[in-house]
Image (cartoon, rainbow, N blue to C red; front, top):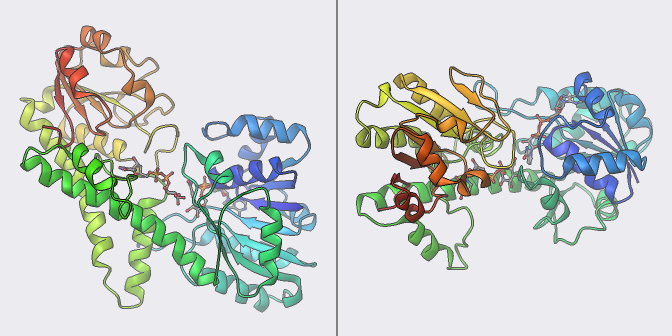
Length: 425
Ligand SMILES: NC(=O)C1=CN([C@@H]2O[C@H](COP(=O)(O)OP(=O)(O)OC[C@H]3O[C@@H](n4cnc5c(N)ncnc54)[C@H](O)[C@@H]3O)[C@@H](O)[C@H]2O)C=CC1
Ligand SMILES: O=C(O)[C@H]1O[C@H](OP(=O)(O)OP(=O)(O)OC[C@H]2O[C@@H](n3ccc(=O)[nH]c3=O)[C@H](O)[C@@H]2O)[C@H](O)[C@@H](O)[C@@H]1O
């Protein structure tokens, strides 16, 4: 099938590469000329494990082309995916300006039947509005159908998640486009959830909101457990073995960040308020998440005298391991707070260079030289497998704050450090 994917970001590139690997002909379009010229040279502008190899392979096989010319790509495709960004605007609503711009462009380009599929996360009602807008702009009703097909991939495991999703959600107003998407995804084994356009949009927000609530729940329990000298890891294990709760997303720590959980929770909150509904639980999840940076800075202050005079190394800057994405990164917020306290901050991240008043390092062990405190803010494998004897040799102080409970307290203590974790007595 001939497919056009608009937006060459984490979602658009992964979708394009995976669909090309299924044998479809994919035209991946972005209006960022620099991004497209990099992709044309075989360079992938983001870090996502396995993505570069897949893109190069299917670009060479001729299944995947990159372009900034939307019109040609639309003309030669029967399925059009919209995968542009939908960031938060100042007032907390989803900023749909990129999405609307694509809709405007499409309305001038469609002159034969297209299935228009929204992959971007958009507020409930957006796909219905897209349909109305295209009709108002004169696109014939026979020439298009709109589908909401939200994306559930996680950064860092984007390709695996796209190949092995838990489900494929298809929101439609009529049956015809369902068959088209079933054919497109026939290599994927996953339950199909067919619902209305609004239903599909709601499922996407509900999923991210639930994940955010689950993380905030365990972080609230961590605070209480800490006060009673209870190990939160035992609590998470005990909770997670109940199949009604499940073991995932019970990792207490610095809280959630990233391009989606914070933005989608806030957007869901606004969508509720727009209808006169106060979303108490969603608000609480955000309040808990926002409190965590202060909590760990205060924890450090209570254990390290004169914290503002100290040299502190932070390991990890991206919002989670295996990505270069720093959008809404809790690690960066922690770094900001430490700078504000007056600390001398040194940072090592396997991929990210931090554009702040810090010293960045290319080598992990160099970054801890003469440091008083080491903070592990993101659970990259390099950190969990560090040579602690070497770290001890290089550091001046002996405090390690493990904000992700990703280290073994026993190993850390064995090397002569003071271990501070998240509710780990
Ligand atoms: N990043 C993720 O893990 C996930 C993101 N999503 C959703 O998918 C959407 C895209 O997210 P990302 O891929 O992270 O965004 P991104 O910011 O990485 O990429 C978006 C791309 O769209 C391009 N773009 C903007 N306007 C355009 C236009 N008029 N024509 C052509 N290209 C245009 C931008 O240049 C950019 O390259 C968002 O709605 C997000 O909420 C959903 C699931 C997972
Ligand atoms: O809509 C999206 O963009 C995506 O958002 C999340 O994916 P992602 O943001 O890539 O990352 P997650 O693995 O969900 O982690 C989000 C944040 O929660 C934190 N987290 C996660 C799990 C946990 O137990 N504890 C915890 O603090 C992570 O450190 C990270 O900062 C969802 O998991 C995806 O299903 C969804 O498609």
